[in-house]
Picture 1 (cartoon, rainbow, N blue to C red):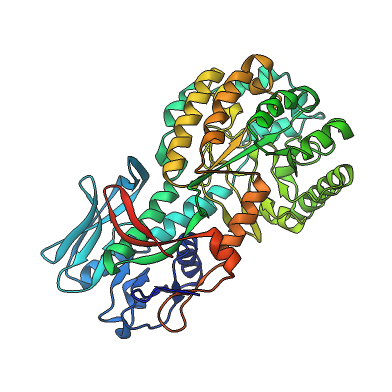
Picture 2 (cartoon, rainbow, N blue to C red):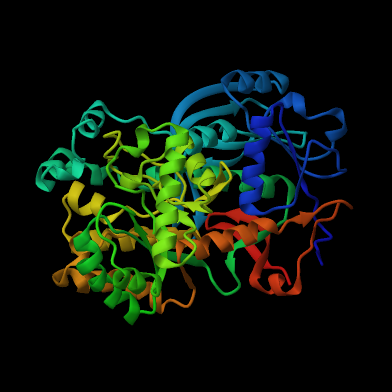
Length: 513
């Protein structure tokens, strides 16, 4: 039992279940001690509006994130402050040389009693009311999170894609050069900036930074095991027979030499699945489901039809491999709330169908993504975003050479490492990296990870297991002082930290023994 005697749990207050749930997601992400809508003497309060902070909270640090323009204006009037609204790019330090960004509406508070505490350039993001323990955030953390994560889960198919799926044959029968020409978007590379990849990480950083600035040190549970600072997950979607019989051999040769185990997602009924090939893959990592026919029509089925189709895929792969198939990835990275619910109903433990951000969705013909690089729970299933742009996007859509694609992936991976995040890679054995001439580039992509002792290399299933184990461990707060109750075996794996401050290099932490 670990006790942190000089800290208090955070009290979360909101006026709706939806807002409560999102505030809990922020707190659960960082794994900090918290309580809901209660009174703990001296404990910091994080609220979405001024009214939810009761008289009992007076004397405690109060942080308010306005849940919209009207609430920001009401808060301003309550404290005699002016409010100006503008759309701005907010950029905050998350580590040495690492920034996270989000473009959003900002509510700037000003007046004689407004004391700026945290800025992004010339834009105030945290303001203290002079003479009081009230701290005002300039961003709607609840609304922005909901819009970017849960709004990003939804995808509306374009009329062109609808027409393609109504043809009497699969879209894959259309010559590949014609399909890729219609998707080609070279200018999309210019849009691949950090604010697009992970704006939610900026929101999460601001949540914890405001608490530390307002109330002092806060204990948390680190993202990875003791001795590890970030993770790599290598995953493959095997779209065709060539990829299964030929391309996988090229990728496996590299991965085995680097002692990397990966996740292989297979459609159950698109091409013949030989026992020899399946044995080769399952013994080199894990097998995941990738729909039945990979025909693009999954998005248009109702929830019962989706569930039945996903269950058929799962059952057949389990029959062929003799292994439990735990994970699902939709063809074309199609995604929706209904699809994740269907995956959960079909018995999958995790889904990895959402990108953090991509240049172009073949389904919607628009950029798409959930705006976070970290896993999150949704509809009873763990969603594991594809945090790095897939090979198809960089080479076939953006027109990069494999060497340039590797350069970009390594640069983005370095940034994700700075956030202590998971680098979730998607490489198709059917495309360029599954050929002998590009095998050296694939090795260059992976060998740095394999040599880094701080990198935890995992399959998608192993990442799911670890994230859920971390999620099950909570700080107990019944006697006001946070306590972490867990087994000695688990405690040895968890990295416990005390966040003591926030500055130009991000969070300042020290280990908890």
